Length: 428
Image (cartoon, rainbow, N blue to C red; front, side, top):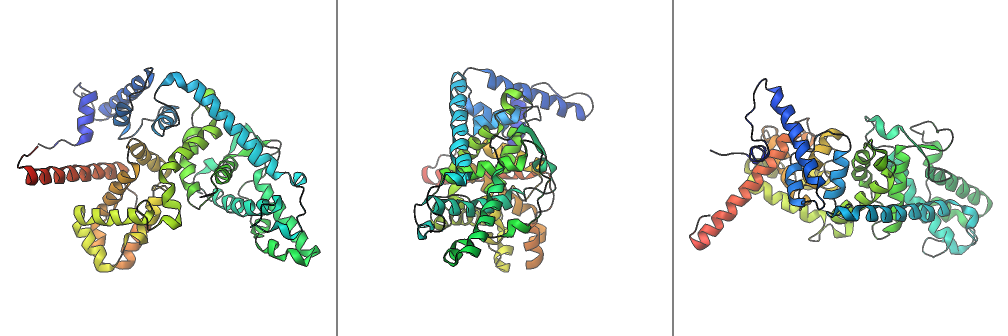
């Protein structure tokens, strides 16, 4: 009989037959899975294949475990643990320098020597003021987006409990720059173009939190700083809406480690974990690559082909309604489903994605499972209802989607075995 891969995994690590009430085996399995993961992490060199297999169906809720595993799976920490101390010290020092050079200095208007009212301040020039105004357009968008992060989840709007590493909050730079631009507009008609490039919405938009007295700050302020530094270090992509949704869960997991040895470096670690993940998925954010083999357009095409093969009834219904994947799956793919589910469910899905070497491909399999799960609604062929369902996905035990993705993998393997049999006459 068919045995699901999850059961194969359980049998591999948990040999004892379950006894007692039905709740006992789950608690026992969770405890043993913790032991298995910790045993893998204890060796001098971590076996990544074993770690991926152990974490494929979720990482147990043990303090600090997930944040450490994600650092390893995403490549921030190397498998060779003898390198950890040196690598962490080096990269955390780099981040400290990034904050000092890219945030603190750029905020200090007094250090900009060129004339902000001269014609050389246009963004197309290399003047300090031109760069400053251009950066603030990016910062303003970041500032809006980080304040909108998961409004039903209080964590991002709560204080970090740590001192701010810069003298003045970064978001004050946007407010100050707007005020400066407004003054320039009143004083000199020649800077109207510059003033128009900066929205004044921050002057009237309410703050989501009260200012913290002293040098404290909120978690969203840390996320804002990380995104701004990333944008400055990666001018080719800069900041694009949605990156905040990718960083949010990563930062939350890093910040949830109660071990002071790790938690004091949450910001630096979150930055490098985010950078590592973005190195894999950044092409889906770049509009000019939409129709390339690496862009989101190619992923949507692959999703459409997978639906034809593994969800034919759903696909026929979608085609009949002319409901294309780009109408509902664009957001699924670009922000890794982070806006479709509650944060604990997103984290569980990401446990699985990060345990896969080809994360975007596995994401496609989960997306197919999502479509399969609402087949009964799609088969009614009501465009408005179908669109609403796919764009506002109903609550579900996400393990059902994870297992659904595994069935698609099994289907692909079956296809490949059949093709080899047709070509060679040998069935494997």
